[in-house]
Length: 123
Image (spheres, rainbow, N blue to C red):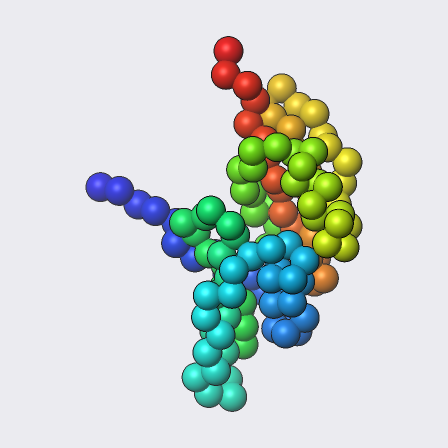
């Protein structure tokens, strides 16, 4: 039985600010933005090349804003990813060299954290 992660909820305080950060600065695609009622707004955003999206909005999750920690994406080149994020105004770490890959870390305006991993070269 296949199981594929489709959607990860991100708790945020300001939906429009978070959406602008992920779309304009990080480069996610704006898939959907539906206001279903004053208590429910559904915003789905997808990283380039990903089959899994994030959802943020109003009435989406009971998590405290900023409490989603360590969501990880695999990237091709840590140096290029870092340079692109910095050119878009995203504060991010230096490249962290580990035996299991090269990492770049950043947080959204609420403090939800992300890890970008360049996989190690195959031996």
